[in-house]
Length: 359
Ligand SMILES: Cc1ncc(C[n+]2csc(CCOP(=O)(O)OP(=O)(O)O)c2C)c(N)n1
Image 1: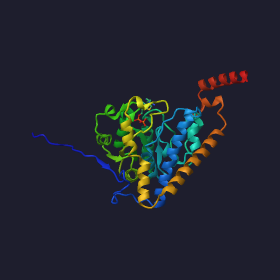
Image 2 (image 1 turned 90 degrees about the vertical axis):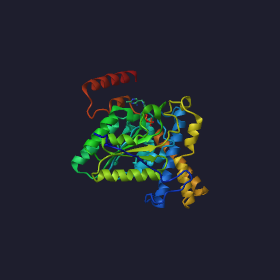
Image 3 (image 1 turned 90 degrees about the horizontal axis):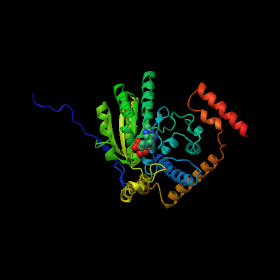
Image 4 (image 1 turned 135 degrees about the vertical axis):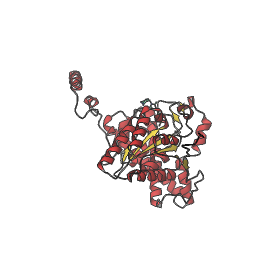
């Protein structure tokens, strides 16, 4: 019998906005100038907050956190595609997406200062808390999506994770469940090239993350993650397919982690300055600003005003964060179980007795 090809595949990569600020008009999503301005302001604010958080951490006023500089286009473009009935299930590097979902910046600062009360879901928004364990939340996302399918809700789930998370067993389980049960979920991988010090080439032998979708019977697409228009378009289309019952999608947003992995890392020990500089040229905010300038939406004065407004908003958030009264020691027993277990209740009593004795 002759050998036949039973499957062959190709993966699309979507790009709309280039490094010079030009767009492919045929693919440009229908965003108004007001929406584009809003998008720009959100990205600028996220960058300013990230930079201030870094300074606060170095001053000992904030704990270890994962920076987002360079990834604003990917996560804000994706979150912008969510509707009010959709869910966001984030990992730990999603500052921009969380802000877009209504999380107050002071609450984010509270979380990264180690105060668990800051981990609460933003009120009125279908958004799960930050997930520090790599990859576990992808399963929660598929579970929510599957439940929504059972309930007949016309909404979808967006979950964001890094390419390192695709090496976890959880990724395979989530992808398999999503494919088999046609769950209305969009699995959004921010492939930022590095999982701490592990480069993409040592993470997987697959030439793209997107092609992994095919093994699970779902659509896979790669997008330029530093092109906010392309990310918004691809994510909007994937979410709409999911809402219509047309199944899940794996999106690979090709981007770069410009900063260290976290404030506890020094990326200069494992990657070159040239590589970082090359990606700085692809900066998502710079690119959007060039487009806006070409189209009469931005000039020197409005650019400076946007940065000044962002800085002011950041300062207000820091003031609000530092005015939050510190949590009491009993707080460490909360936020894990809805009802405290007997052994934990015993430990809490013992701790509180010691605290009172010392006081
Ligand atoms: C289950 C688990 N294993 C290990 C870690 C330690 N850890 C934190 S982030 C990280 C790398 C994650 O890389 P990636 O998924 O690509 O996301 P990125 O940090 O690049 O955004 C590791 C190994 C963890 N938090 N959870």
